[in-house]
Image (cartoon, rainbow, N blue to C red; front, side, top):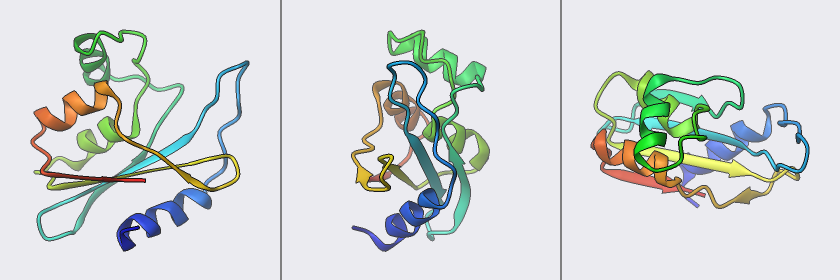
Length: 122
């Protein structure tokens, strides 16, 4: 695993877990935007309570209008306010084990539109 991604996973492990609601599994996801020189532009986590018009727009375009709550990737892209070269994305299980964090179709649209050159995920 990439050393920057390992650091991101460790940071994620130190965060409080997200409670499961009903039958839905909820995971804590974290994304970090880097510029071309590898400097951190923004770091954000996903939210099951906050929405944003940009998130909603990409969700509608991806055919998933119910996906309006902020995903870590889109939240991070919005916060970066600069050209993002690399996006690091990590997700862990309730046991703290890294699990696949490949961006969903909503986030993939945003990543492409924002011109991100490299995506590294667990």
